[in-house]
Image 1 (cartoon, rainbow, N blue to C red):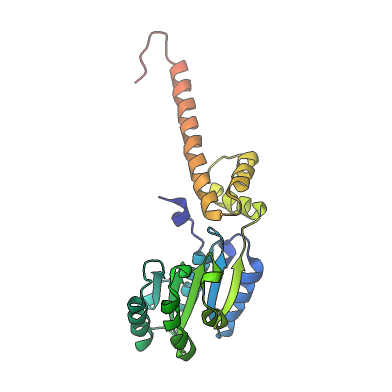
Image 2 (cartoon, rainbow, N blue to C red):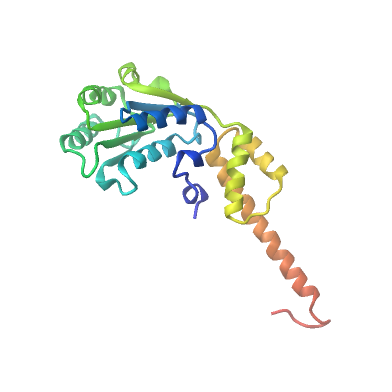
Length: 228
């Protein structure tokens, strides 16, 4: 199983870094008055993960059909946007106070498709819109002005290492600090890539352990014996 999915954070405290932004978002949630949100930044900075945690906090783990997650690069046509949004806001949330619509990779939306979202964002009181993107310049100004905007910068090496150590402990993986520092330096703030690199290092580590075991077993064999 891919470790990014296996160890995807389920709470804000499990996320490495971004403490100031997460504190503000947590404050919105606790106040019960959360604005539409726009998250932008480099890949691997936890934007989509944070959006998912927000949905869980507002809707519960089950969601009851109240969480709609769209990859905007796949749903970029005007007709698609109109159908999805109208269908979502037309019906009241089920067993929850609101619905959440996540437009992942929203910089893939055409300007016309984005324009369709302006009025629903203004009028709805029961639907939260969350946008994530790498390039904020691709998001039209009317969308930005209707959102609380957060930039998620590449993570410092110290935060990358902290996150990797937590995974290593859970995997009972013995890995030296130099290797962790090398991974953190290589990925340049991308936590998703860092976890992939750690999983690759784990596979090499496990192979080394197995080779050592076979060698030790071989050395214990009587001369001329064939190892099973």
